[in-house]
View 1: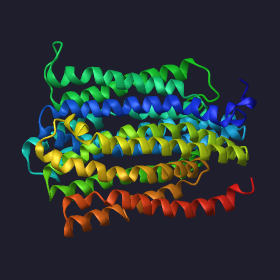
View 2 (view 1 turned 180 degrees about the vertical axis):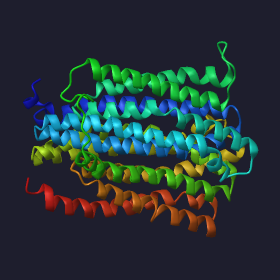
View 3 (view 1 turned 120 degrees about the vertical axis):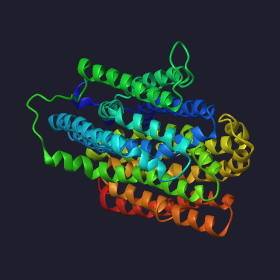
View 4 (view 1 turned 90 degrees about the vertical axis):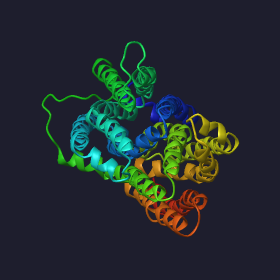
Length: 449
């Protein structure tokens, strides 16, 4: 296909969205699967091991926030440059993106070397949990370069409309992780039993294998955008435009990491098992949220391209369909969490205390899924048209100005069961604010396209 016939500008929206989203949705489901499998294996080592990995989870979330947030800025800027037919600028954005994410990894590697133990010890004085959490957290940060580079390349390919290779890359990483988990955790096939260290090593090896595949594809296949460092010149303008969308996205997702840290602190004052339950929830909810994030990965370049091409109808048609599909997925997820709660918890070797806490917790928290579907859809639209700050405002409302004060209030004056109500209440508050921001953005920038 010629550059001036990019499918994002003329293909039927329904067919285009699903062709671009289904690979990402499938790969996200595989990602969710290996996240859950990883925790299921770790849970067999005991509740302390599951708690240790749960305490280290915010570190991983922060890495994902920086990698994916930066990549969202890269994706948005590349797709807008392609929509405006500025192909050389799109190439420069892609090259800058790789460099920015490698530099980001270096910062996390330094934290892994010098800060992991202090971080874990800030939550508990249980020596076993501290040791296992430190082992896990250090490995997944120091060797995270594979995840950062693979993310940069995959989001670059997605911005061109190619969703298949990113899907294959993530699937390869997930499959390698799933295969290595039992081998390295329990000591199978001649490998020593490494416990939680084995889970961490399986994770980073999968990421590195995925990175090698992504590098091979970007260097051996032909796309509308290519990455090259020959005659590379640093551009502060490109970096600024990447982070104009990317930085709010980083903060928006990093808030999730901060949220878990604060919730773990609140919950540890009530029950150690509650921390494990929260960790299980975040693993299980990925089965619901990951397909929606895959959907929005496919939608973002379409939205950005047609905004750049000033095609209002295609922009709005894509937004409507994205929201409808997201609602369907989240409704199914809510039904799953209500109908199979005990079964889901028993997958993680749940104790009687975990079951008593976890059943009402999962059912209550899952009430946030349906309003979240609309919030995520509109947040993606804001990012695609270069208004990442609006997505940031939504996250601040949901995860700082609503959920944390509510969780603290319920923990202070009510029981643990009421703490979980903070999730759906905060999501509804965020959605109401989102509606007002969308109306404003529509009147100022979309109505006159």
